[in-house]
Amino acid sequence: MALKKGSEFSVIISDRMLAQANMSEEEFKLELGLFLFSKGVLTMGKASEFAELSQFEFQKEMAGRDISISYDEEEFEKDFQTIMKKHKKD
Image 1 (cartoon, helix red, strand yellow):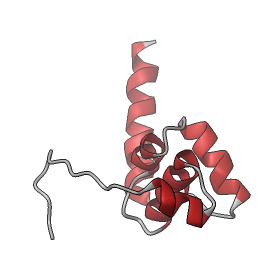
Image 2: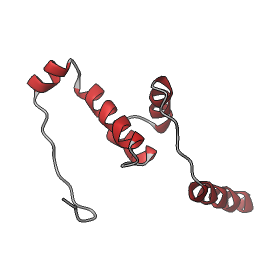
Image 3: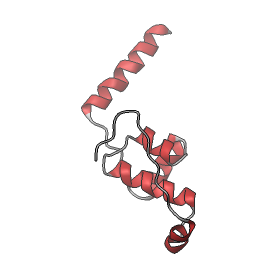
């Protein structure tokens, strides 16, 4: 099932299911965000947003679970260009 860009959908997780999993809503969001990031489904920014954490806090959670940051050449080039643009402004 493919979603159109900009579309939204809701997932309802009952309190009973959270209780059976022995998780709070916040823990569930974090675990799902980490899972989706580790599978390459979400970027770190989107996964941390989903988990309602800052990227720094999300990275700390990743480190505690030995989830590495995948950083490919394209992402490096994009970051490098951003740094160069900011440097030229100064």
